[in-house]
Image (cartoon, rainbow, N blue to C red; front, side):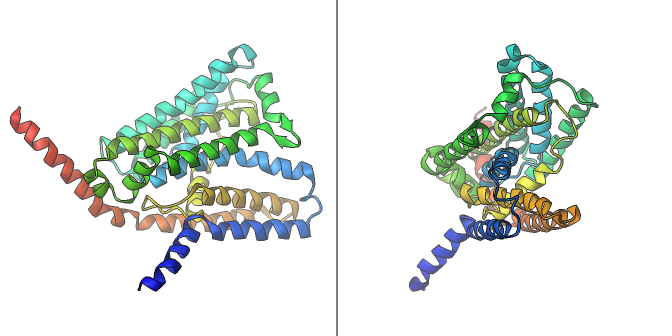
Length: 341
């Protein structure tokens, strides 16, 4: 059995790194180079890179939560509401740009705190909890912006369009964020605790890890990234719009899963999720350049999302026993305190 261990480890590493999705990205990229002269232009490649920023931020947020053993279906609503708040505060003025960005990011953090509280303290299943908060946030977005409201500022617009050597600055910022997340999750104590809490919360609790705190922190960081995506949405659209980025929460979940992360928690690498983001972006761009009917695009995306949804089905069974162990340990700790009182 031991002689099969390296092979099993290699297969697991390949799956978690998203090697399959990266292979698809390369194949699709080479196919597009061969089939479309427009695809290989510098302008098109630059536009593709900028188009991935919003999905790249939300997918990174989803990845953090999935590693913690959860899921966040409120991320798109978070980004929309954060964009609306930022637009209302800035309202076309460079003088209020910093205040608006802080307001948008703070909105995301507050949403993350609420999600973390509901999941870890009220013990509501993440799927149900974030689906509910997403619906509430959508209602708030429609209340504040039944029609587009506010405006971006000239400085924010200029930053969104600013490029260095043909590479958009906003794309470079996204890459830096990806690097920071990867380092934090693979090299820091918090990252190791996050993987442990997501993989086996019962064992993590027995090892002295505060599972509730670590899990809640994942939702807070995801909320912050959702708020950042909202700022980028405003820079892209120019106004706060409650109808923007529809379906983004499911796209982000799909790219995380096809990138090799396990919805059971505790397994996966950000590089795989990045591959999923590139694959989704390339599908849209290549199909448009080849004048393929839009329903084919939706068909391909829908099939990928269905695969992600199918992977979600067994999540609860895999974690049920471990969560029971964790909850029992916490209850056992509380009982002596209650007796002493």
